[in-house]
Structures are given as C-alpha cells and as structure tokens.
Image (cartoon, rainbow, N blue to C red; front, side):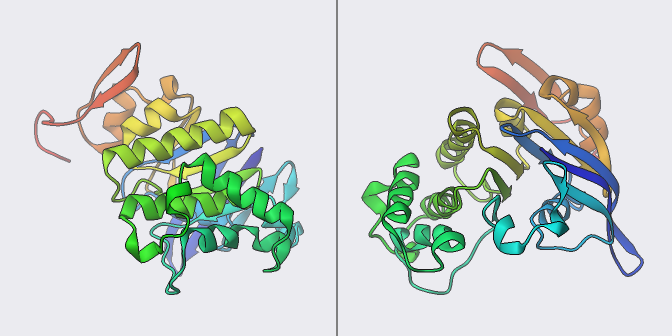
Length: 258
C-alpha cells in the first residue's frame, strides 16, 4: 500500500497540491482523475520521487520513501512519464532492456533477457522487437515504453497519462494490459487518466482531484456519480450502467459551460 499524508507542493507562493492525504491499495488499479491543473501529475511525480514535496510524507508499506535508497526504490516503483522521449535511435528490444537497468546496470544476464522476452510477449510486441522507435506509430511506441516499465519488475507502476494521443484500439489494449498486471501478476498500478470512461470501467479505486486538493475518493460506484462528476468537471453527466460496464455521457451538456 502507498499512503500519502498531508502532502503539499508549492512553487513560491503558488500551491499546486495542498494538504492531500490518500491511500492506494496494493494489487489494485487506481486512477487519478480531474480537470487540467488539478495537481494529478504533481502528486504522481512526488510519489515517484521525481519531485520533492514542500511538506508531508509518502509511505510505501508503512515506510517513508525518503528512507529508501534510490536504487532500492527503483526496484519497487517504476514510472512512465507523459510523452516519454528518447533521442537515441533504439529498437523496441533495446528500449525494453533499459527496464532492467536497476538490476543489471547495463550488463544483461540470462534472467534479464527472460524478463525482457516476457514483457514484450505480454504486450504482443514480438513482431516489432527489432523495429526502431521512430518507425512506429504513436500507439506502438507507447506500448514499447510500457513494456520497458513492465520489465522493471516492480510491485508498483506509476503512469502519467499513458493513453495520451492514442487511438481507441491502442488505448483499450493498454488499459486491458494494466488490468491484467493487477489481476494476474498482483502489481499495483496508479495512473493519471483524462478519459472518465476508461477510469470508470478499468479501475478498482478512483481519486478525483480539483484545485490541488482531493475532491472525492473511493470505489468507482462511489466516485463516478452524476452529481460528483458535475461538481468535478462543471459539466452535466448522464451515467448509464449495464452488463458491459459504465458509460459516462458528457456530450452536449445542458446550459452554459462553467
């Protein structure tokens, strides 16, 4: 479990995250949702230890992350940032191998190669493993970066908008893969996602943020309600639940946008 206690982040006089407390259960998929500027990515990057909080604590399994050596933390938590960019010309195979750096420091072992093969197979990228990243579509490239993150073999994965700029098919492929990581491998996944329908249909837990604070948090049925979504986004929602999941319709809202 990852616990955030009274966490804040400010740049000068501007507070980006204010007194946030939340819990992210192990082996579950948790989504951070909310409007732009809500503080979602800032919160995620503080959990990833890529940003230092102004105040507050983050604990993993009851231990403050600041008490964990960076190298050891990299074996517990893997992070995929928004729109990752490598300036090197790499193949998919070479990129995924970077996920093993916390263990091998660049000298790949037989175990590393086995894990790389498994990560590539998990996302059905075998036919692309010798392809160069700049030859791939945006969706294929995002899948390759996700495979690198999976190959890090951490208990927890932090993903910042992994569906950004993807078509529907690739977005579904990634969300199904993340769901399988939790259900089949017992991984913990925390992601920032803007598509409320993906969050509602694949998450175990949702944390909704607005203005740098927690707006509400809980199960999908607790958070994804017409009233709470209206308050969060300033839009009218019509939510329909059926056998295939939950559909949040926010198109053609009534009245003026807030």
